[in-house]
Image: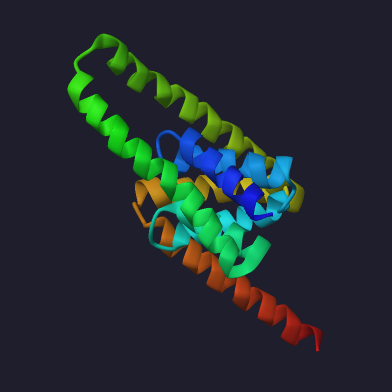
Length: 182
């Protein structure tokens, strides 16, 4: 199992060009679709919590998934696997990039990655919307999504604050239901 954990996060570390946002769909494909270590809902919950916490999102995802699978040794395995390729490739590629950055094919390669990452994030967003639709109605989902867009982009409120408020509201609502049931 440790070898599988290592290989999954090593692949993500090598292929996740562009950092956390481009790596998230790769992690989802591996842990949800391929190995079925998590459900889509569990992955979304983990991603939401990882977004609230400080630090690089991919290391938080790797650490949590490693811990769920194999405890503390799983964390170490997943973190080494996700960090190792980045550290080595960054050292090598940045050295090469700084020497050849003026070549047209290097500039084209850099520009070509952006649309690929955009498509990967769009696919992940559609999958999240489909899951959200299964748990809510469009009458709730559309105004909620538009409201979040206004709160995050127009009012410029930090996502961690919004997520924290939603978590507190959900917990209060849940405890209110339990008190009402008694």
